[in-house]
Image: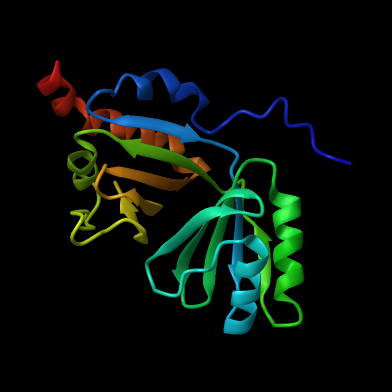
Length: 201
């Protein structure tokens, strides 16, 4: 039996117009309902097996993520800790991706947990994206300090987030924020963007 997804409402559904109004200073687009699976595994052989099964290798370096077009379309694997990863894929792929990961993990100890409903994703870009993020985030996002492929857990306006640097040269980022904090973060982005919108008007 599959769940009825026709009546789903994304955490930022009520904010779409206000987020669209931040352009051209900042482009903020919610990417809701992504598959998000938290993986705990310390055995490097099992980690390699899961990467092979996905078609995207797990990151070997701290504070990094890998991505590619794997067995389930566009897939990203984020390093969150020494034995913790977040596997991201398109919407409605939770069950097949989870099954593949669990099969590849066995018989090594570890866990694969569905955390898809825990966070929503917001893609950020635009000429002032770093300026806006700097108002509430202590991470140095200059391309020399945070190149493409960087992934960190940090605070943005006191809200816990996972920040991905998707394209440092183009200034493209993805912010993963808990669903319960999504509205707060959208309101903060709107306020932090005011001076840059005025400068471009």
